[in-house]
Image 1 (spheres, rainbow, N blue to C red):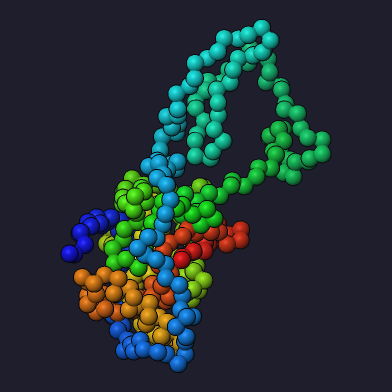
Image 2 (image 1 turned 90 degrees about the horizontal axis):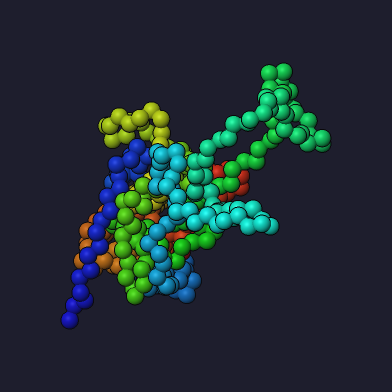
Length: 325
């Protein structure tokens, strides 16, 4: 008895001025002549372990809400949670303060600014006696205190320092299909609204992604105002979750050149060939079509196809490292 058919809807996310370089196939398919018998260059037990695609993730059901700003064009003040009922003032303490949440994603609620009832225009805030203004100005008598740089945050689905167990993204799949694990071996596709969420805080407008398995092939994401024959705004929008995920997947789905294959050692050729064959055999109904498309860059990951997030490299926030298992 055959297994039941499972429909996986394809999430189309290509209409972005950041993604034009990753969907234009520049190389013809390269199909190597493989002989996957015993190799004199590699022992069978030294192959990379299987990622166990039948059960890639396990974990409890997670909420469907991701606490992340939907877009950079959001109104100035977001609609926050309702305020609790104000408590009456007691004789020994002041009014109760509403609870606050310490998170960079929530903007403060608008408040009226009280005007001073006295002549306070000559007021100067107290200055730190141990600090001197590096750029004094006769037009600004108030001291300018140095501000700390904003803390950098990645979208929860991109954070490689604490990867989400409910996020499933197969980089070797023939279709772009990031999924959410909802329990009982069931998954749901990531919605277009989630893919449109801003990827970082503060926002980024260019990005370079490096994978240690393919260090010579960095993934560079830049804004192209005239991508795909269209004319976009000269002001680039912030990178979104869909931009980054789609760029990584589209880059790894590109075919390699004969020059890239010729640069491999015999041992590397065998390992890449094994990964290529396993990727094609993983979909029996489309195995022949996948073989005809040849070796792809994802095969150089040697079977490590599950996305496990990005981590910053040093202090350069525009360069991230890709983690795969």
